[in-house]
Image 1 (cartoon, rainbow, N blue to C red):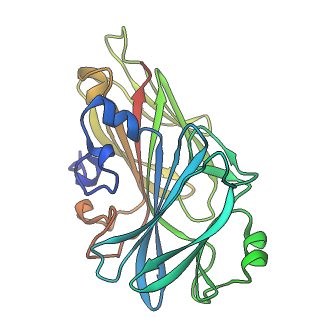
Image 2 (image 1 turned 90 degrees about the vertical axis):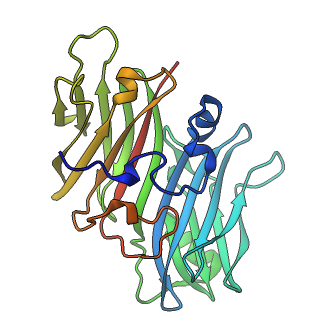
Length: 292
């Protein structure tokens, strides 16, 4: 088995939201309703990380935008939170390195799945001097018409998503959707594992109902990795279900899907910042929590 990546551990890398790294039950619950996506964009001849975090409160859906500065050591942050009197679309400005980044969004008709991240019927765009530097969502024509912006010539709307982290819930079945390459197929991802009342539990991973990985004798194979193929890409799957088997009921199992073999030292993965912005491939981390 390969060495378990340090970015796979919950405290292995710096996280923007401190609640996500806490071992206490109260703080871990606060982090469970988050989906964090890290994109790599290039403008003003510099590569920067843009971090979008989706969440939900009692009033509605929220998101934050964080942009890395030129030193790669700090982030400029903008929070958009709904209220009883706010609209689900609008625009704001974010200052980064004394530059003004325009942020536009429209979640009026957005559709959501089991997570706070919208899946269709929305846009979230960032523009600099009238040029789109990042666009998320399927309403491309609407944002271009509204803002009069154009895409930067060297950058298509296939935004480079390099990292994603999500929390999912279940008892025996944990389901979500996943996209492993830009403009790729959105797959139904399903993790099945019954650790209660079984002398020989097993772990099953399904992609669009098809079994792509099975782990038997889970009591002594609670950590491991294997390679599967998704959309013609080799994807390394790492799992750690130790807490499911031997930990507390409030603990989570962790799964990581990584499309990058060139990344020899996963501890250099920028989350949220790194001195090195070169991060080929895509890393998707799931925290699977048992419902109490």
